[in-house]
Length: 137
Image (cartoon, rainbow, N blue to C red):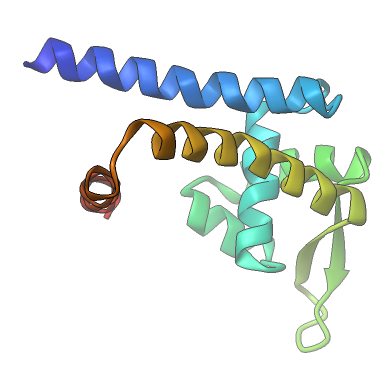
């Protein structure tokens, strides 16, 4: 049972990884790493977090997050905007290009969702979603 679960998890994560790699190739974004994609996604979800907020959500150290953010700034995908309230802190904003990449990255998610929708019944999708909710709590 455990081996079957492991095999299925490996297949499912490989499917998602392949879909994300295909999206990167399709939209000519080969110079971004999966980690950088993940950062853009989280910044978009958090709607302009501070470095500290991003590090907390990602469960990483602030210096580690800062290093990746600096690379994304150099690539023109993220910019820092000083807070109007506290000039010592900055908020991270996606540039227009960063937002476009996030939208294109959604292509991979939509692809996987499409596969699930094609292969599972509505009842199975509800169960699958409930299982994922329980696992990711």
